[in-house]
Amino acid sequence: MQPVRKPLSMSPKSHHGIIRYLQEEVYCRLGVSNAHGVGVFAVRSIPKNTRVLHSTLSTRDIRVSKSSLQHLPRSTRRLLQDFCEHDRQYYWLPRHGLNAMSLYQYLNHSTDPNVSLIKPGVYRTVRTIREGEELTLNYDLAFGDKHVFVKNKRALR
Image (tube, rainbow, N blue to C red):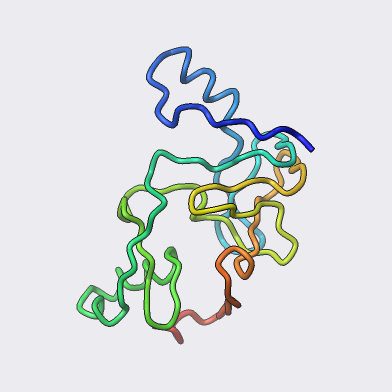
C-alpha cells in the first residue's frame, strides 16, 4: 500500500509553490462522459490511494428545503436539480454558490467506482487510474442511501 501523502497548501502563493502544486496535485479535467454528460477524467496515471480533487472552495453544503425554493425561476430550479445533491425534501447547495465549481461535483456514479469519498471534500483513488479514464464514485456508498436515476428529469420537478 502506498503511503498517504499530505496535500500541499491549497493556495500556492509562490512560483515554486504553484509549480509543485501542478506537479503533485493536478490529476484531472472535465470531459464528455459516456456515462452521463460531463465527467471527471485523469490527465495522467493516478496511483492507488492518492488524494484527488482537492479544492480551495468550501465542501460544506447548505441544506435548503425544496419548498423554500419554489419562488425561484424554473431554470434555476432545473440547475439545482441537475448539479446539486438532493432528496425528496431538500437540496444541499454549495456554500460557494453556483458560479464557481469543484471537479468533485462532476463525479459520475458507478457500482464499480475507482474513487472513494473519505469525508466531505476528501476523495481517494481505490485503485490505479489510467490516463484518460473517467473517475467515478459509488453514490450509494458515499452518501449512505440508494440513489434513483431518472431519465426524464422533468418528472422530479
